[in-house]
Length: 405
Image (cartoon, rainbow, N blue to C red; front, side, top):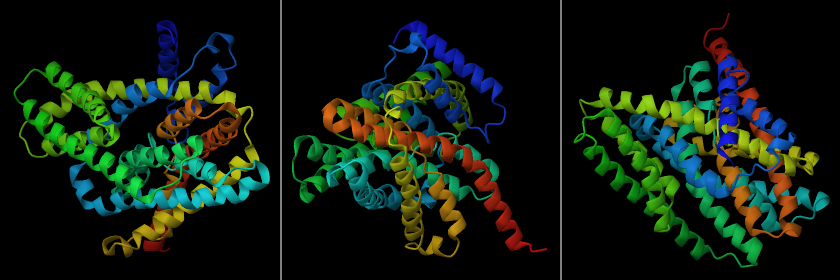
């Protein structure tokens, strides 16, 4: 990918961000995705390819850190049990149920093995709300909904990578599933990433006050975001959880220092520019990359799997909320539906898909890639467009219930 193409893609993103004034009804990622699909039919962009390494090592750390350092430590503490359950046990349960449904349906269409079906499910379980959180905050008075969606999406990426690694090894190499090995890998990768993130976040949150120059403080935040990510990956830990944890540690520091406004302002000035830049490139590139698989997509099967993913997530979210007394009496089916619908597939799912494409042979991997890419695109399009009217409708219904007549 040449510098010229990058500049062209950024120019397209600038135009879309500028003219898309109704981002609630037509979120920018959705427009970027469709634009990328359109660009794939132009010969000039035929040689553009995005790899899993680019998405994972360049785009993901910046996007995760931006969300994490802006995420309220108070909100995390308040919703910690729900977020932790949904992003670990809930994600695994969702993957198992969705995998079983895909296997039962796929046997009639694509002759998918059980391991292959579970692998597809593991790819489709991580959530990536992107613009959804801002829409939720604008369309509903209940901040906890947006907090749960955002917190879950940051943490479940780490769980999904471990689950995908185990299942892809079974699928590609024919290895057997070992519960003890899976649990060992899961705890090593997850706890290692969290502990390293806490250490890095705490250390750098103290170092930032040594340097009073705003530019150098921003430079330090880049080191935290990308340095922590790659350091964790070097030791075999979760770079995702390390970056998220260090970002949250910074957020906690913001709330316990008199220099909060000064530093937060400096960071916002930089990362508020980086975020739309990364979003522009990643979603345009996803659109360009996905077209090859969408032309061979099994759309009937993909539609069924997409619908099943929404229903299963609704069941898991509803069940999780009933486990905690603080949520049991305040969460009804409307709130559970909104949280479920907000679980859009995106960047992490595409990274896992591209990782599978480099591991699996063409004869065994293409049908999985085509099916999964189709479901990801359906999720990005349908859920992105539907989130604002759904949230407004549910908020209006709640207001009528509280104030009839």
